Image (cartoon, rainbow over all chains, first blue to last red; front, top):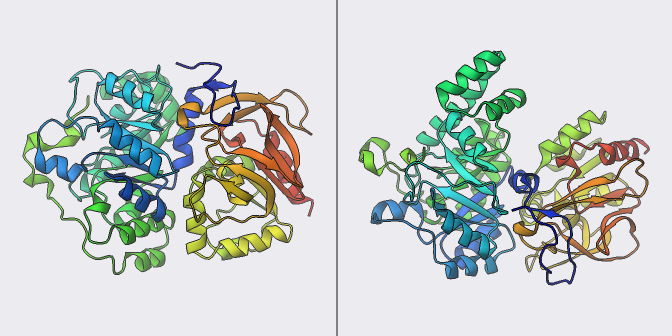
Length: 309
Length: 184
């Protein structure tokens, strides 16, 4: 939906540039790099996140830990809540829609949200198709567990990727598994000639052109964050050292004893991820972290990462 | 600290410069020039303040350290920030007033060709992402405009932009900055 002659803004200036190009959609994610995106459920949370140094917030009705506990169908949040969070902060605001629910995405775009997360944390609306994200002017971030999934989402128009991890568990093990799987998938491409690349694309269900781009760059062609189970500064730094561009923290902040202090510590740990002395400093005296969940203790149908195709 | 620093590193290295990431005041030692990248200005200034980088950086720039700022970096340098966080601190060394997200939210981010003073050849591809709007310019010299507002200014050894040359592959502005930094 790239269009010319955008709407008049409050200053009376009329930008005549081209809006909604893939460059400006992927470009915002590039500006978020090295930062922490925090889940918030109230304007007050959003202000705390901004004060702590979050580079963006994710506006939600319930954090994943509560979605997991309460069960039922999880849907896009109430537009009133999303608007109130957008008004509370100056940093970018993201919101989630259900996998395949392109009308929820249209509504979020109409609200003027800065990024849409087509998220497995909500109950999927389509068990075969994700949203065709190219026609939207607002950029999308999507979850992945491996390189095949990441490249399919990029082919559908995702301007940013994140690992799925296992949201709402406070357990980083799945995020590590997914980040390592993406890294391994990309490393494997390095020695392949074009015929072998086509074969690899078939094996992992990847579009050949996106896979060829990954091979050329030695990384995903869009920004890649870690998400799903990050609860401590050390978790954030671990993901950064595994090569992601930044982190999402969902339940890990506002389900902990001292959210502001923990949020600040996770921001610092994401910046100084390779400085253990700084990590030791910021990890001290944070109070209790969120309660964690062992992955095998979750019934198979309760695993969110398995949603998405 | 936070933001699109890797893209600047790539563009600067291609322009013949050696680079170093600056995350503490010690990292400032011996630099010919510094880039303040795009990112979130609130996040960047808070991290700089908490780690004690804000004051040494202000001193270095005031004493003539060549400085190249894009988008959020320009907000960090500006004398006045409208619509920032209530207590948003900055460096206040560049004589312009900016409005954060002055062109609107992400859905209003845009690309437009620009004529930049001093650049030969075709127009420069301007990529504006939740860009600040320059409301007024004091003693700084305007080197590019879009729709009646300055989008690039120069003041002494500071060059500040509202757009993102590091996302374009057009190295002309990075090359000019490397020249400026080398001429100390």
